[in-house]
Image (cartoon, rainbow, N blue to C red):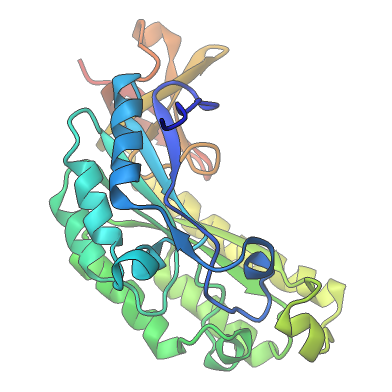
Length: 309
């Protein structure tokens, strides 16, 4: 008998881990060393877990894995993430499905069709691109080029209009000179990611990079590059949030803090993304319920809104 799932999140959303481990061999990453090879959970097992959680009142599901685009290759001999998301989407009571931690190489484009066609699959994708310079990507063992990366972002936005892209970038990787860093800056300015996190390279024991590359870029230089990159992203994030003013979005209410209900749109994952603040004077709202909220004001990190009556 399967062990009953215990929720550690608020009752209306849950994280569903669909696989463990990673078969990618990025030069800087210790995850495969720690977790071992990619191992997918069977589709039926995941679907049963979601059904059980829906029966408990869960409405929103964050689908997570170290590398979800590889899902199913070990079990079904093909990338099966699109099939899995369709099966979850078919379950009555599933309001939102959100996808975290995709990989750009050999991206399964049928997933974009599912995202476009299914109303309860959020137009949101967390995909760590790490860099754009072909030279740096090759040293990172990412098996993708600058041209591939630009084309991937373009296709995602063409196939899923309005998609929210969250990504992660790394600065200061061995071999990143000023030219390669400027390529990264130009890419971020062009792509205008809805969400972008960044960090400075740091050696991880046992990785290819730690054993084969000299970490020759100073901490000061890494921090300078990180600061410059995030200043650009700050301006982008502010403008994108401000552009939401006046629009109405389906919004889930997560909690109450002081004088505000705190909610999220389909473009916002718990704990890491923008939140929607609604004054309690708007009237009583129910935690875990969805409301249509008109955005009235915006900052880099938060949106203010009123409930549409």
